[in-house]
Image 1: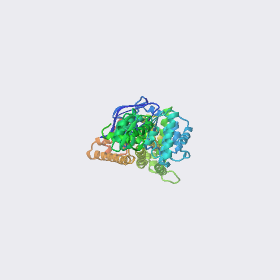
Image 2: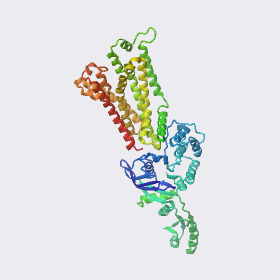
Image 3: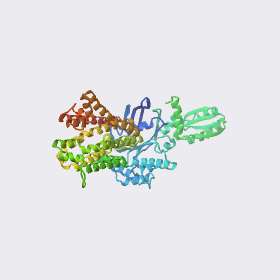
Image 4: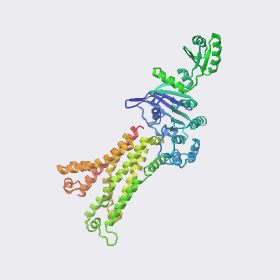
Length: 308
Length: 285
């Protein structure tokens, strides 16, 4: 276990940013931290990085309290949403400095600039970088020392679509080749769905849902298949008999069916067969996607209704 | 070795930022060197020049007068009058503005991702922002004295250093207070303006205390002032630097003077220690 949080509570004055949050990140995972603005994502990340001290709860990274133990930082890479560096340093100079701090050869600085797609800006001052370039620079700096665990707060913020894709591919490659564990917060949810194994949804400082994505989808009903028909009641009765149906909702225009993992294709075939059998006309089948955005909408709705 | 290297890298980075655009530093240096040149000329150098005040005193003065000059660092004191505020502003700029802006913009949170304890990070920043300024100021002052009165300074180096010590606890105290303000505000501009206000208001407090001593004929205000400005105790001991009507109210012994110098530093280091503790244990970013 790389990260273990139990009952984390953190307030800013009278505002409770994180309220009894518990979270675990296992080695080798890419965990997504999902939530709207003000959900408590950045506060949680700052606590993990030792920048904030919890009011209550137990927080451990690599088995140590991050507030008290500076040594664990050599094993962690930190990517901040709003990265800021000494403005007047030159790009390559600063990264070489980072190399020296962490005991890596200075040649790694150029290597990292190439990896993140920042070739040709070696001698530019940091203040001369665009927002997107600065984000890439921040990622280069965070990965410079080959950390075992990377905490990234909105890592693709300020990047253009191509750069976003490059960074996500980089995350996947580091995860696959170098077994780097990631904790990534983002509100660009479709991006998280590309890279995350597991996710924690937080809202209002509390955990709404946690686990493997598919399990979260089943729990929320996000990803359900929508079938428009003229005989929803009859079709629902027939579909209900299918063993892999996890959730079924009926309204006057059709049904929404959540199938178990791996049964979605079969659901299409079975629904068509059953529709013929009960004499229902099918006007459309809208495939549910495994989108975190959809998941998040449901989660937020359920959370607002007290479904958490 | 790893931690030492990290410390030095953070220190070098702070130096790079604090002294990257040395306009203020250049002004300070030119100003101080200018005063030095004026003093040097006024001491009678050059063909046909009339001996200046310092030179006359040194030539005709008794050993006690010479000692008084040395102890009060007359040559240095003149430039202190002009340069102290400028050096003070330099320290304020480096601590309040630089550190405050680093806190405000998030540079510090990046530095805190290095595997180095917080107190070492703050030490590196303070060495850059304050240590270097102190060395610059002391270097110029001592150089000035050595050039003007080399033999006398060599023979009384202990007194010279003691005088400087007495003079420098005050800026150290202001440094500690400004550091605390900067850490509390986490805003460079607010900390800078508050620090400037603080710097001058403490000076005003000193003047008020001295005035109060004169009006009430009591030595208590002088003793309080001597904790903030230990130079007052040393000056009173040598009967130099204060109005005679004031200094006759209180003539501390040499050991008492040392006590007030110690108290001044104890107060300054206490405030600095509070800043360190706050940065280490309380500061959240």
